[in-house]
Length: 309
Ligand code: SIN
Image (cartoon, rainbow, N blue to C red; front, side):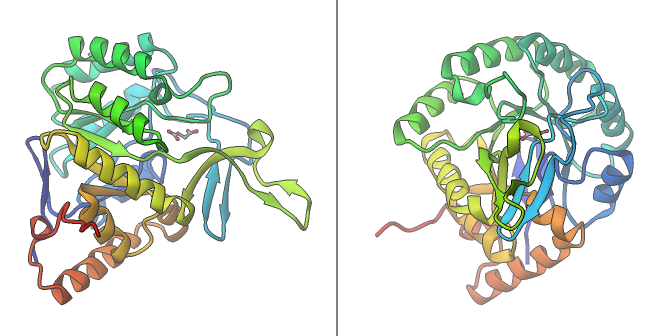
Protein backbone atom coordinates (compact mmCIF):
# COMPACT_ATOMS: atom_id res chain seq x y z
CA UNK A 1 0.00 0.00 0.00
CA UNK A 2 1.40 3.40 -0.98
CA UNK A 3 0.46 6.09 1.55
CA UNK A 4 2.89 8.68 0.21
CA UNK A 5 1.84 12.25 -0.39
CA UNK A 6 3.42 15.59 -1.39
CA UNK A 7 3.31 19.24 -0.48
CA UNK A 8 5.39 21.66 -2.55
CA UNK A 9 8.75 19.96 -3.17
CA UNK A 10 8.47 17.77 -0.04
CA UNK A 11 7.48 14.09 -0.08
CA UNK A 12 5.96 12.35 2.92
CA UNK A 13 5.83 8.59 3.41
CA UNK A 14 2.33 8.81 4.89
CA UNK A 15 -0.18 11.64 5.48
CA UNK A 16 0.13 11.62 9.29
CA UNK A 17 1.57 14.31 11.54
CA UNK A 18 0.78 16.11 14.79
CA UNK A 19 -1.19 19.35 15.02
CA UNK A 20 0.80 22.28 16.31
CA UNK A 21 0.39 22.46 20.07
CA UNK A 22 -0.04 18.71 20.56
CA UNK A 23 3.07 17.19 22.19
CA UNK A 24 5.48 19.45 20.30
CA UNK A 25 6.50 22.16 22.76
CA UNK A 26 9.51 20.67 24.57
CA UNK A 27 12.65 19.07 23.17
CA UNK A 28 11.63 15.62 24.47
CA UNK A 29 8.20 15.84 22.87
CA UNK A 30 9.67 16.91 19.54
CA UNK A 31 12.29 14.21 19.69
CA UNK A 32 9.61 11.58 20.29
CA UNK A 33 7.68 12.82 17.25
CA UNK A 34 10.86 12.62 15.21
CA UNK A 35 11.15 8.92 16.01
CA UNK A 36 7.49 7.98 15.48
CA UNK A 37 5.71 6.49 12.47
CA UNK A 38 4.23 9.91 11.63
CA UNK A 39 5.88 11.09 8.42
CA UNK A 40 6.32 14.65 9.64
CA UNK A 41 5.88 16.96 12.59
CA UNK A 42 5.09 20.60 13.23
CA UNK A 43 6.55 22.55 16.12
CA UNK A 44 4.48 24.45 18.69
CA UNK A 45 3.53 27.86 17.29
CA UNK A 46 6.36 30.15 18.26
CA UNK A 47 6.55 33.76 19.32
CA UNK A 48 9.90 35.56 19.06
CA UNK A 49 10.67 34.97 22.74
CA UNK A 50 9.78 32.35 25.37
CA UNK A 51 6.19 32.70 26.64
CA UNK A 52 4.87 31.35 29.91
CA UNK A 53 1.34 31.32 28.47
CA UNK A 54 -1.98 31.50 30.30
CA UNK A 55 -2.53 30.46 33.93
CA UNK A 56 -3.14 26.76 34.68
CA UNK A 57 -5.19 24.67 34.46
CA UNK A 58 -5.36 25.62 30.79
CA UNK A 59 -6.02 22.25 29.11
CA UNK A 60 -8.69 19.66 29.88
CA UNK A 61 -9.81 16.41 28.32
CA UNK A 62 -13.53 15.85 27.91
CA UNK A 63 -15.49 12.81 26.73
CA UNK A 64 -15.75 14.14 23.18
CA UNK A 65 -12.45 15.98 22.85
CA UNK A 66 -10.40 18.66 24.55
CA UNK A 67 -10.60 22.30 25.53
CA UNK A 68 -7.49 24.47 25.78
CA UNK A 69 -6.37 27.99 26.39
CA UNK A 70 -2.60 27.63 26.42
CA UNK A 71 -1.97 31.24 25.43
CA UNK A 72 0.89 30.33 23.08
CA UNK A 73 3.10 28.93 25.81
CA UNK A 74 6.31 28.14 23.92
CA UNK A 75 10.11 28.08 24.14
CA UNK A 76 10.65 30.96 21.73
CA UNK A 77 11.34 30.98 18.00
CA UNK A 78 15.09 30.31 18.12
CA UNK A 79 14.56 27.07 20.05
CA UNK A 80 12.23 25.67 17.35
CA UNK A 81 14.31 26.89 14.42
CA UNK A 82 17.34 25.31 16.05
CA UNK A 83 15.48 22.00 16.44
CA UNK A 84 14.54 22.09 12.76
CA UNK A 85 18.06 23.01 11.66
CA UNK A 86 19.46 20.03 13.58
CA UNK A 87 16.89 17.51 12.38
CA UNK A 88 15.51 18.39 8.96
CA UNK A 89 17.52 15.63 7.29
CA UNK A 90 15.59 12.99 9.28
CA UNK A 91 12.05 13.90 8.23
CA UNK A 92 10.36 16.72 6.35
CA UNK A 93 9.45 19.20 9.09
CA UNK A 94 7.10 22.14 9.58
CA UNK A 95 7.99 25.20 11.64
CA UNK A 96 4.99 27.05 13.08
CA UNK A 97 4.94 30.75 13.94
CA UNK A 98 2.22 32.83 15.59
CA UNK A 99 3.40 36.36 16.18
CA UNK A 100 1.26 38.53 18.44
CA UNK A 101 1.67 41.34 15.91
CA UNK A 102 2.72 41.71 12.28
CA UNK A 103 6.22 42.87 13.23
CA UNK A 104 6.77 39.65 15.21
CA UNK A 105 5.68 37.53 12.26
CA UNK A 106 7.93 39.47 9.91
CA UNK A 107 10.92 39.15 12.22
CA UNK A 108 10.44 35.37 12.53
CA UNK A 109 9.74 34.94 8.80
CA UNK A 110 12.99 36.79 8.04
CA UNK A 111 15.03 34.47 10.29
CA UNK A 112 13.28 31.42 8.85
CA UNK A 113 13.98 32.64 5.35
CA UNK A 114 17.65 33.14 6.12
CA UNK A 115 18.04 29.65 7.59
CA UNK A 116 19.97 27.14 5.50
CA UNK A 117 17.62 24.35 6.62
CA UNK A 118 14.87 23.06 4.35
CA UNK A 119 11.40 22.98 5.89
CA UNK A 120 7.81 24.16 5.47
CA UNK A 121 6.58 27.21 7.39
CA UNK A 122 3.07 27.21 8.88
CA UNK A 123 1.89 30.73 9.68
CA UNK A 124 -0.73 30.40 12.39
CA UNK A 125 -3.45 33.02 11.83
CA UNK A 126 -5.91 31.42 14.19
CA UNK A 127 -4.93 31.25 17.86
CA UNK A 128 -8.16 31.98 19.75
CA UNK A 129 -6.61 32.20 23.22
CA UNK A 130 -4.78 35.50 23.47
CA UNK A 131 -6.77 37.94 25.56
CA UNK A 132 -7.56 41.13 23.68
CA UNK A 133 -6.18 39.83 20.35
CA UNK A 134 -8.76 38.66 17.82
CA UNK A 135 -7.81 35.89 15.42
CA UNK A 136 -6.24 37.35 12.27
CA UNK A 137 -8.01 34.75 10.13
CA UNK A 138 -11.38 36.31 10.98
CA UNK A 139 -10.22 39.73 9.71
CA UNK A 140 -10.00 39.33 5.95
CA UNK A 141 -8.35 42.66 5.18
CA UNK A 142 -5.73 42.08 7.86
CA UNK A 143 -5.05 38.57 6.54
CA UNK A 144 -4.34 40.05 3.12
CA UNK A 145 -1.98 42.66 4.61
CA UNK A 146 -0.11 40.05 6.64
CA UNK A 147 0.34 37.79 3.62
CA UNK A 148 1.45 40.68 1.41
CA UNK A 149 4.16 41.64 3.86
CA UNK A 150 5.28 38.10 4.75
CA UNK A 151 5.62 37.16 1.09
CA UNK A 152 7.84 40.20 0.50
CA UNK A 153 10.35 38.62 2.87
CA UNK A 154 9.66 34.94 2.53
CA UNK A 155 10.33 34.04 -1.04
CA UNK A 156 12.06 30.65 -1.29
CA UNK A 157 10.68 28.05 1.10
CA UNK A 158 7.13 26.64 1.10
CA UNK A 159 4.72 28.65 3.24
CA UNK A 160 1.19 27.84 4.37
CA UNK A 161 -1.38 29.27 6.74
CA UNK A 162 -3.29 27.68 9.59
CA UNK A 163 -6.85 28.93 9.45
CA UNK A 164 -9.64 29.13 11.98
CA UNK A 165 -12.88 27.34 11.13
CA UNK A 166 -15.33 29.26 8.94
CA UNK A 167 -19.05 28.69 9.14
CA UNK A 168 -20.54 30.68 6.28
CA UNK A 169 -20.29 30.03 2.53
CA UNK A 170 -19.59 33.69 1.84
CA UNK A 171 -16.70 33.66 4.30
CA UNK A 172 -15.19 30.58 2.61
CA UNK A 173 -15.37 32.40 -0.71
CA UNK A 174 -13.98 35.68 0.60
CA UNK A 175 -11.05 33.97 2.29
CA UNK A 176 -10.34 31.79 -0.75
CA UNK A 177 -10.26 34.88 -2.99
CA UNK A 178 -7.53 36.34 -0.76
CA UNK A 179 -5.51 33.13 -0.38
CA UNK A 180 -5.52 32.53 -4.16
CA UNK A 181 -3.57 35.71 -4.71
CA UNK A 182 -0.49 34.37 -2.92
CA UNK A 183 1.99 31.58 -3.74
CA UNK A 184 0.90 29.50 -0.76
CA UNK A 185 1.91 25.85 -0.68
CA UNK A 186 -0.78 24.73 1.75
CA UNK A 187 -3.57 25.75 4.08
CA UNK A 188 -4.27 23.91 7.31
CA UNK A 189 -7.96 23.62 8.17
CA UNK A 190 -8.88 23.91 11.01
CA UNK A 191 -7.51 25.28 14.25
CA UNK A 192 -9.71 24.64 17.28
CA UNK A 193 -13.26 26.00 17.36
CA UNK A 194 -12.52 29.06 19.43
CA UNK A 195 -14.12 30.08 22.68
CA UNK A 196 -16.21 27.08 23.51
CA UNK A 197 -17.28 26.59 27.11
CA UNK A 198 -17.10 23.18 28.77
CA UNK A 199 -18.54 22.94 32.26
CA UNK A 200 -18.77 20.30 34.97
CA UNK A 201 -22.32 20.04 36.31
CA UNK A 202 -21.14 18.11 39.38
CA UNK A 203 -18.78 20.83 40.58
CA UNK A 204 -20.82 23.58 38.90
CA UNK A 205 -17.58 24.96 37.50
CA UNK A 206 -15.65 25.61 34.36
CA UNK A 207 -12.72 23.22 33.76
CA UNK A 208 -9.94 25.59 32.67
CA UNK A 209 -8.86 28.82 34.34
CA UNK A 210 -8.10 31.39 31.59
CA UNK A 211 -10.94 33.53 30.24
CA UNK A 212 -13.39 32.14 32.82
CA UNK A 213 -13.31 28.73 31.16
CA UNK A 214 -13.60 29.71 27.49
CA UNK A 215 -11.20 27.87 25.21
CA UNK A 216 -10.55 26.20 21.87
CA UNK A 217 -12.38 22.93 21.25
CA UNK A 218 -10.83 19.96 19.50
CA UNK A 219 -11.67 16.29 19.01
CA UNK A 220 -14.93 14.66 18.06
CA UNK A 221 -16.88 17.90 18.48
CA UNK A 222 -15.12 19.49 15.53
CA UNK A 223 -14.87 16.83 12.80
CA UNK A 224 -17.86 17.90 10.67
CA UNK A 225 -16.69 21.53 10.81
CA UNK A 226 -13.15 20.47 9.90
CA UNK A 227 -14.36 18.36 6.97
CA UNK A 228 -16.51 21.24 5.72
CA UNK A 229 -13.51 23.56 5.75
CA UNK A 230 -11.22 21.02 4.07
CA UNK A 231 -13.82 20.35 1.38
CA UNK A 232 -14.69 23.98 0.65
CA UNK A 233 -11.07 25.13 0.42
CA UNK A 234 -10.21 22.09 -1.71
CA UNK A 235 -12.97 23.16 -4.12
CA UNK A 236 -12.21 26.89 -4.08
CA UNK A 237 -8.40 27.00 -4.13
CA UNK A 238 -6.09 26.11 -7.03
CA UNK A 239 -4.71 22.58 -6.78
CA UNK A 240 -1.20 23.99 -6.25
CA UNK A 241 -2.34 24.95 -2.72
CA UNK A 242 -2.58 21.69 -0.82
CA UNK A 243 -4.96 21.20 2.09
CA UNK A 244 -3.85 19.81 5.45
CA UNK A 245 -6.88 18.52 7.33
CA UNK A 246 -7.01 18.93 11.08
CA UNK A 247 -9.89 18.22 13.42
CA UNK A 248 -11.59 15.19 14.88
CA UNK A 249 -9.15 12.48 13.85
CA UNK A 250 -9.53 9.51 16.15
CA UNK A 251 -9.40 6.61 13.69
CA UNK A 252 -8.20 5.56 10.25
CA UNK A 253 -11.75 6.21 9.03
CA UNK A 254 -11.43 9.84 10.10
CA UNK A 255 -8.15 10.10 8.17
CA UNK A 256 -9.85 8.54 5.14
CA UNK A 257 -12.71 11.06 5.36
CA UNK A 258 -10.31 14.03 5.48
CA UNK A 259 -8.44 12.68 2.42
CA UNK A 260 -11.72 12.01 0.60
CA UNK A 261 -12.69 15.67 1.17
CA UNK A 262 -9.41 16.73 -0.43
CA UNK A 263 -6.75 16.82 2.27
CA UNK A 264 -3.20 15.85 1.25
CA UNK A 265 -2.11 15.34 4.84
CA UNK A 266 -3.77 15.29 8.24
CA UNK A 267 -2.79 16.64 11.63
CA UNK A 268 -3.79 14.93 14.86
CA UNK A 269 -4.28 17.07 17.96
CA UNK A 270 -6.69 16.10 20.73
CA UNK A 271 -6.45 12.35 20.23
CA UNK A 272 -2.64 12.53 20.10
CA UNK A 273 -2.76 14.24 23.49
CA UNK A 274 -5.02 11.48 24.84
CA UNK A 275 -3.38 8.46 23.25
CA UNK A 276 0.23 9.67 22.82
CA UNK A 277 2.51 8.92 19.87
CA UNK A 278 1.53 5.30 19.35
CA UNK A 279 -1.67 6.63 17.74
CA UNK A 280 0.17 7.08 14.44
CA UNK A 281 0.88 3.40 13.82
CA UNK A 282 -2.75 2.57 14.67
CA UNK A 283 -4.06 5.25 12.27
CA UNK A 284 -1.70 4.04 9.54
CA UNK A 285 -2.86 0.45 9.94
CA UNK A 286 -6.56 1.39 10.03
CA UNK A 287 -6.21 3.60 6.93
CA UNK A 288 -4.45 0.81 5.05
CA UNK A 289 -7.23 -1.64 5.99
CA UNK A 290 -9.91 0.72 4.65
CA UNK A 291 -7.98 1.31 1.43
CA UNK A 292 -7.42 -2.43 0.99
CA UNK A 293 -11.14 -3.18 1.41
CA UNK A 294 -12.00 -0.47 -1.11
CA UNK A 295 -9.36 -1.62 -3.58
CA UNK A 296 -7.37 1.58 -3.40
CA UNK A 297 -3.61 1.24 -3.58
CA UNK A 298 -2.62 4.91 -3.21
CA UNK A 299 -4.06 8.13 -1.82
CA UNK A 300 -4.50 9.68 -5.26
CA UNK A 301 -7.03 6.88 -6.02
CA UNK A 302 -9.61 8.61 -3.80
CA UNK A 303 -8.26 12.00 -2.65
CA UNK A 304 -10.90 14.68 -3.14
CA UNK A 305 -13.35 12.25 -4.74
CA UNK A 306 -16.21 12.89 -2.30
CA UNK A 307 -19.53 12.27 -4.09
CA UNK A 308 -22.49 14.64 -4.00
CA UNK A 309 -26.07 13.41 -4.10
C1 SIN B 1 -2.66 28.24 22.34
O1 SIN B 1 -1.43 28.23 22.51
O2 SIN B 1 -3.42 28.89 23.06
C2 SIN B 1 -3.25 27.46 21.20
C3 SIN B 1 -2.64 27.84 19.93
C4 SIN B 1 -3.59 27.79 18.79
O3 SIN B 1 -4.74 27.38 18.94
O4 SIN B 1 -3.21 28.19 17.70
